[in-house]
Amino acid sequence: MAGRAIAVDVAAAPPSTVEAVVVEEDTYMVLSAGPEVREPAVPRLRAFHEAYTVEPAEPGSVVVRGGSPLRFLAVVHDLSRDPSWREEWVAAALEEVLHAAEARGLREVAMPALGRVHGTLPTERFLGLLRSALESARPRRIERLCLVVPDEEVAVFRKLLESRVRR
Image (cartoon, rainbow, N blue to C red; front, side, top):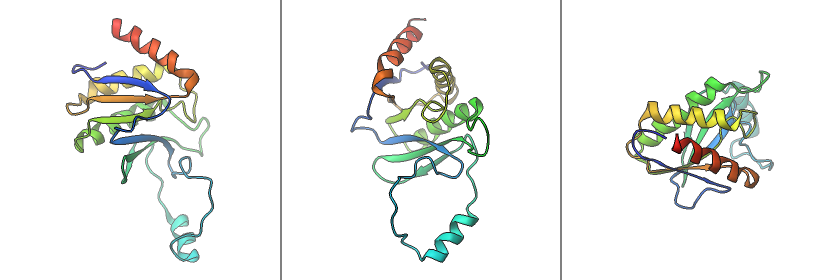
């Protein structure tokens, strides 16, 4: 897809070898929050104060969280808007993911089709945005990008990727 050959794979789950996993997120980091209720590690009043004073992330940005693999929170939704996502935010987040991975020297990254997990971005348009991001970012260290999509979409993504390579 870009000048240097980066292997773009499609799978229903990220391979165990990835160094970072991208998550589709909103400005307040609500979409990736788990459904479990747990006692906060900080006192309740302080937790309420922190929640009230938190600043939203900028749409199109990426927030990097530690762990193994790293988690890249790609902010492509603003839940106060309808629709909550914008194509330009997906495009910006794709470039930011590539820059963040490159800056950390990562070789393998897994990501969903941003704008499709909690949005309705068409598959072909996502792949076009990904191609543009790869051409613009020109990553040198990234060797493999795994697109993680639902089981029923794996064949469709593979077919579209193959047809784009042949062009």
